[in-house]
Length: 130
Image (cartoon, rainbow, N blue to C red; front, side, top):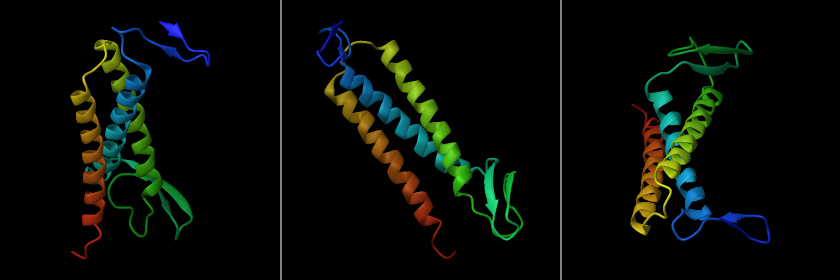
């Protein structure tokens, strides 16, 4: 391993470059965040919600008996999924420490875009009046 003048360490020809490692971890984090954010809503997982009429916060699953703002709880689930996805990505980089082929990196990018698109499609579908 050698260090650049800026202090960034770059691996040798057999190791995974730092840019690939960062890319894999970021793509896994995006996949985890999109999954957790969407699955928490679809599966009615317990989450934090604000009840504006009462002016209180509630931690429950399913219906809150009135108007409830679920965004904060869903974002917290998404952040948890982001952290878990980043850990999975770091584990993958640890298990397969050599430079990855371009096709595998493109696959991770495609999965991240698909996860983001499916999550957006799920919430867009929920806006239709039925």
